[in-house]
Image 1 (cartoon, rainbow, N blue to C red):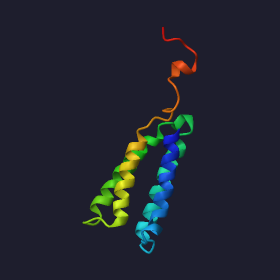
Image 2 (cartoon, rainbow, N blue to C red):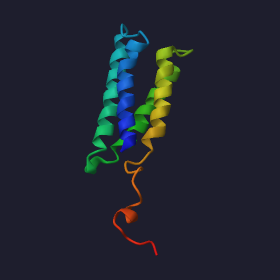
Image 3 (cartoon, one colour):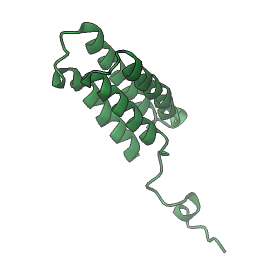
Image 4 (spheres, rainbow, N blue to C red):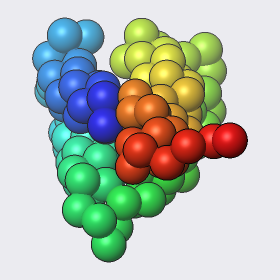
Amino acid sequence: MWGRVVEIMTAVWLAVSPFVFGVQDNGTLLWADIGIASLIWLFSGLSYWRPTRHAHLLILLVSAGLVLWGRFAEIPPTPAHQNHIVVGLFLMMIAVIPNQASLPPQAWRHGESQA
C-alpha cells in the first residue's frame, strides 16, 4: 500500500503549497487546494478498507482536473498553477499502482505450487 502513502504525502504537499508559493491571500486558490488535498486524502484512505479498495482510482479524475485547471487557469501558468500540473501528473502515475503491488503473487502467498 505504499502507493497510497505517497498519495497522502502528496495531498499534504498540495495543502501546504499555497503558503510555499505565497498565494495564501487568494482565498479561492487556498481553499481549492485544501479541498482537492482532502479529496485525495479521502480516496487514498478509503483504499485501505476492503469494500472500497479501488477508491484510489478516483484520484485519476481529481488529478486530471488538477492538470487542466493548472494549465488553463492563467496563461502562462503561474508557479502555483505549474505546481498543480506537476502534482496532477505525479498523482496520475501513482494512482494506477495496485494496493498489493509490493507483495508476491497471490498463489505464492498461499503456498500453492506453480507446477
